[in-house]
Amino acid sequence: MFLDLLMVFIGYFVGSIPFSYIFPALKGVDVRKIGSGNVGGTNALRASGSVVGALSMLADILKVFVIVVVARAIGLDSFWMYFTGIAAVVGHDYPVYLKFVGGKGVAGSLGFVFAVVPLMGLEFIGLWLLLTIVTEYVSLSSMVGFLALVLTAVILRWWNLSFVLLILTVLIVYRHHSNIRRLVSGKENKTDVVKALKGLFNVGGDTK
Image 1: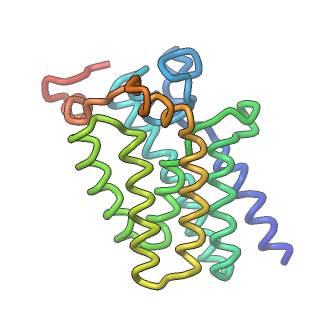
Image 2: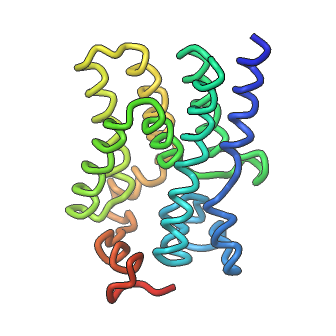
């Protein structure tokens, strides 16, 4: 029990590492004062360019992925492994290092999914890319993508995972409450993901 609780505790503090704040800050950019002010990969991309944005997203994914993989490797059962992952995502959303003002949980939750069921992670990325290219709304694509994962888990009758994914999805939707209001009013920020990908590979795109 001590090890289980210790991993949950560690999970929160690892999840709290604000890579989407750290990487832009290395370029002298404070994402909290630019764009949406959100400490997340999308805002890091808008504020600092494709490369920094991609690194921020990847690091936010990996921090949760790694802590869940470690929890499984040291023998935690599925309940405590899931709990550790949830704690890491909560840390991402409410990081102790930034006075509990963090991201919206999408990258962290995706890291959890890749650690538990990698194919579902690929499902999310495929759907997210398709929806983001079509709508240019990252927030909408993220919420719909995780709702799809919950549905997939239910169809497969993975009840425990369904419940955990539902918790993460509810948290994601809650953290996107301001985006939902902007979506309804038609004022939500758009992101050209194709342009961002071109910038990432330096193909006539963003070179920040």
